Length: 244
Image 1 (cartoon, rainbow, N blue to C red):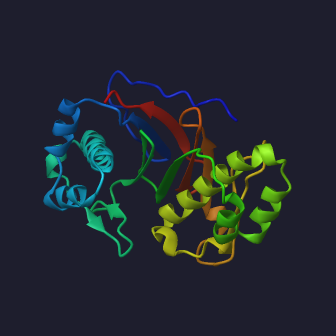
Image 2 (image 1 turned 60 degrees about the vertical axis):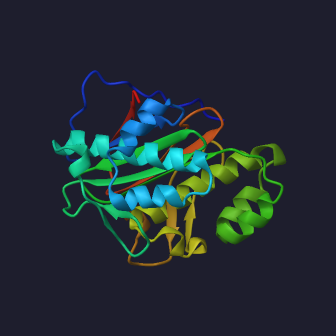
C-alpha cells in the first residue's frame, strides 16, 4: 500500500487560483462542542436530513462534514458560512447557485475529504478498507470487463487494495460528472494495477471523453483509498488538513 499522503496544516486559508484544486482532510472524531458548532451552521434541509439518519454516528458524521464544507466555502467565498445556499441536481449533488466554485465531498469511517476548484467539475471519493467476503461478486456488479481482468490477474493478497483503488476512482468520476451511481459503471475503465498511475482509460459515452478528465489517487490515511477526478488536464493539486 502507498504511504499516506502528507496533508499540510496552513497558517491562513490558502488562496485558490484558476488551474488549482485544493483537497482537504478532516477527522470526524471530535467533541460535542465542535458538533454543536457545525450544527448551528446548517440549513433547515440539512438539519432535516441529519435527523433522518437512524444511527447517531451517521448523524454526527453528516453534521460535521456539512459544517466543515460550509466553513471552507465561506473562507473561499468571503461570506458567512450560515449564509451559503446550495442547489441540487436530480441525483442530489449539491452545488452553488453560481459557477464561481466547484466542490465535492466524501467521507468514510471517521475521515472526510473535500475538493474545491475554479475551473471545471470535481469529484472525490474515500473508502476505508474492510474485509469483503463477496469481493468478486461486488466487482462483477461494479467493474468493467477490463477492470475485472486486471483484478483477477493479481495475487489474492493484492486484490482487496486493488478493489478499493478501482472503486474510489470510479466513484470519483461519476461524482464529478454529477450522475452518481445512475451512470453505467461498466461503460468506462480506470486503472487499478499496483504501480500503475491513476487514470481514466476509456469512456464509451462520447459526451465524456477520457482525455477531458484528470485523475489522481492518494492515501488519505493508512488503510484508506482516495481518488479525485477533475475536469481539465494540468491542474495543480494541493493537500490541506483541517484543524477541526
